[in-house]
Length: 492
Image (cartoon, rainbow, N blue to C red; front, side, top):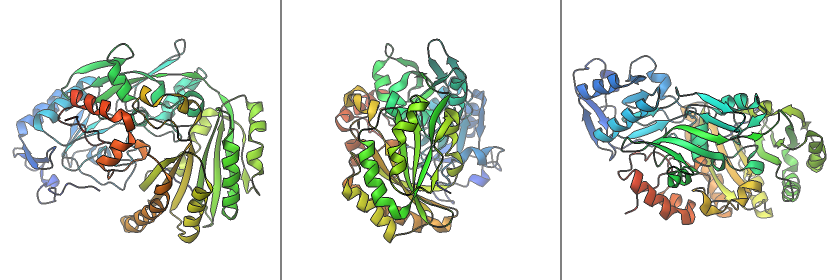
């Protein structure tokens, strides 16, 4: 079965004529056209660009240079953007140099870590990309149960290193996701109901702020920034390392998938809603109403039980009896294998997504989801329901920047296509589904937000935490250099 999950805004002033990327190398002695923070065209002096290049231990890439094309390409290929400069940082000193150059020049600036970038905002047209993907060191301390990772690290790397000591950090569900971006936006995954969100397990970080200062962040050092990084996204600086709390996990768990026919969708979702309301914290279930290879939809339960393996059989027995099963792969399985199980169904490609939180799977939500899928069939779309609750809900909303602690689920609508011709039809399908489902939701997960989220929606999403976040934004980034994100405007 083929299933995909998670998965342009151009600046009006930017045109092929105003920003001739392909001519940059041919005339290095000329001023370099670029785009500023306010969207207007700038001219970078060649000497300033070369001085910047020479200040880096890593690379500075321009159009036409080896490595430029791969460095500007992100997982979500719906965004085909061409920055004027890409700084591939080798360490914190390079990050500091890049931030100082961006601020001094007033450049539109994007920050790329793992590069999944569902919203496309880790790359920009005409500006500078500060690329952290080469910074991928990991150090696990099994005695302290801590992991220190650099921002280019992906989940699979952390899983592998930590599982050598039967430890794990509560991270995401697709193992090639970047850890840094996932964590700063909240970070939910298979262990989150038991141990909290990724951001709840962030115990410290190193950060380069918009004025080029390197600061240590922990409960004792700049605790206000630690609070903000736990869900506030990339608004406050660029992390150059993160420290996670690890937990004793695995190496074997109970998990796999259960697959039911779409014809039973209403009945199965109704039964699942009753079942999951009393599920233990150790259980995480991701539901997909997705197309199968035979062009028929199916209902998939992607399951992980992180408690004792023998208890998994008993806990999940009711889930196996919701209808007539098409497939059952539940079995004792290595945690690393569960974490990688969905990777093949989430290849790099073109994606468009909308989503929002719900308290539970009500009859109205059930009917809205199934009804839309029945009347608007499409082989390149799916609707998913993720699971929250448990340890996530026991953290007070004001304890971290991440505000939405009460919802038990998120509804996610995803479209994917292979070439540019499919973009309009697919995005319209997703928007149509969202018009149907949005009235039943409240708030959204910023890591699943799009580039087109309004300031009003971002403000509402952070609830009562927003004024504190805006004040911290004014303190650490008053010019809003770091704006390509779920942007929090500096307080006035």
